[in-house]
Image: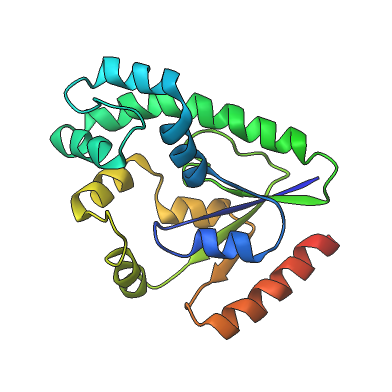
Length: 191
C-alpha cells in the first residue's frame, strides 16, 4: 500500500486536494474533532490539565482556543494528550485499508510528530499567501493570534518542501486544480 501524504501551509487547500484524489483519506483534523466530541476520557484528562477552560463534554474548540490564547504552553499540554489518540486512530485506519493500492494522509503535523517514512510519497501543497489568508479569514473560528502560535509549533515550509517528493501548485482555480489532481493521481499510482 502506498502512503500519499499531503502537507503544506495552513489554508493551502491540503484537505481539498487529499479528498479530490478519491483514495481513502485519513484527515487528522476531522479525527481530532470527532475525538473532542466523543471521547469522555480525553475530556477528563484535558479538564484535569486545563480546569479553567474545559468545563463540559463535548469539548468546545472555542474553549481550547481561549486556553491557547491565554498561555502558549497550553498547546503542548493539549497536544501531549490528543496526539497519542490520533496516532492510534491513524494505525487503525492503516490496518483497515491494508489491502488498498494507496491511502492519503492529511496530517498537519506529519513531520513534527515523526510519522514520516522514507517510502511515503509526500506532496507539498504550495499556494500564494494572499490567497491563503483570504480563505483563512472566511473560516468560522480563525484567529491570527492562534495561527501564529500554531505556526511556531510547525517546521518551516522550506523544510517541508525539501522533504517532499512533489510540489503541487494550488491556485484555487477549480478546473485547473481538478485537471492537475487527475494527472497527479495517475502519475503516483503508476509508480
